[in-house]
Image 1 (cartoon, rainbow, N blue to C red):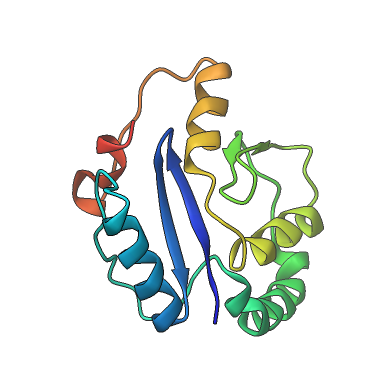
Image 2 (image 1 turned 180 degrees about the vertical axis):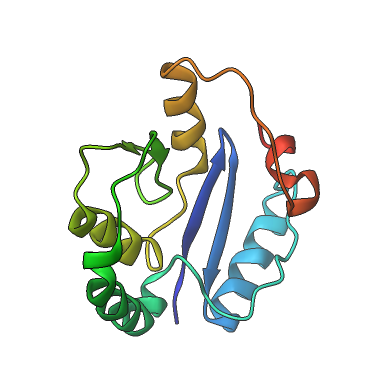
Length: 137
């Protein structure tokens, strides 16, 4: 059974993912300990956990084939895998490394936002997700 943090969203907010039984057990423990909020997230697979390792290998292989067609970014892009920015100096192979890791690594949303703020970003626009990201800021 696997249950692990799949996303670091804000100071006291995380998401978890894993095998159904383990996630259900964690939910029960959270409710028992009076967590501020416990609610299921609709997901068909345990994204951002080690349970995605096999899929991540297949995605990485496909991305490696695309390296010759991948351009370097024209601006800074903050990556969920570690919350750090890549830029025009980042080689496509390094971009693929980080994308492949993302499938089995927790989302570092909080680190991304803190990194953007440190870089002087002060305007944020959300497309899609029904205002969920804005609510975490």
